[in-house]
Length: 324
Ligand SMILES: [Mn+2]
Image (tube, rainbow, N blue to C red):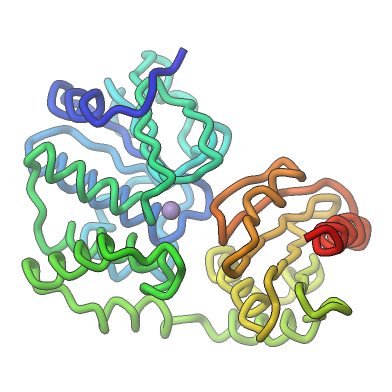
């Protein structure tokens, strides 16, 4: 049985043990990478042995973060503790199984509402805007060091998960943490924003053009959707992580409350990204299809052909708007 969220347990675990393996979800975003790096680098500074594992390597967008060269694709030792950051389900935690042979303690640090508390120790705070925000407080509470590299990682984690301080999860608290990171460690918000937003590959912008040409809006103009099929994926070589951001266009249309992006990942499997404006909890809509996430951003995966899945999901959304 897992125990309830507890700062004390996590703090005690971090202080007591010496060998840590850190991991996050597949196709890591800025919050996952930033949280992983910030915690890993700080643990290293206090003399712990740390493996920060990213089996697929660091997504290009985040190569600029200082410290990324310390991440590894394979484990280099057997850990006492495995820490999962920003990952809602054990299934999505991308770590080689061999890590678990010595039955290490599994710590789950996350902010997804849908997190199922899969760790032996769980620090799951849905009210946190980013996992990076939890890591910031954790380092403070442990009195572990923060340097410029860790500050950049934390800032990137918080900035990316709040849409660079535009989304409804942009609280006074995250702004004040961001402000402290900038003031105390002299990191550059403009440089980080530029690296995250203005370093897209040519192929990804071309592919975006094709995806946008599939954009449609419902008769009531309350939801919109677009798709990416296997044929488009084959024609362009674009990292998944660059594709993830396309969805925001669906929801940026005036009057639209829910935006959906259908991605035919492989024949017979469609991944759907959901976005919403105030008023609609898309984590609940995505949960209907076995997915989850946050109030304004969620995801799910549905088996079937692209056209069948689109028809099924769009009819469900249409029904939702008829009733709400
Ligand atoms: Mn996150």
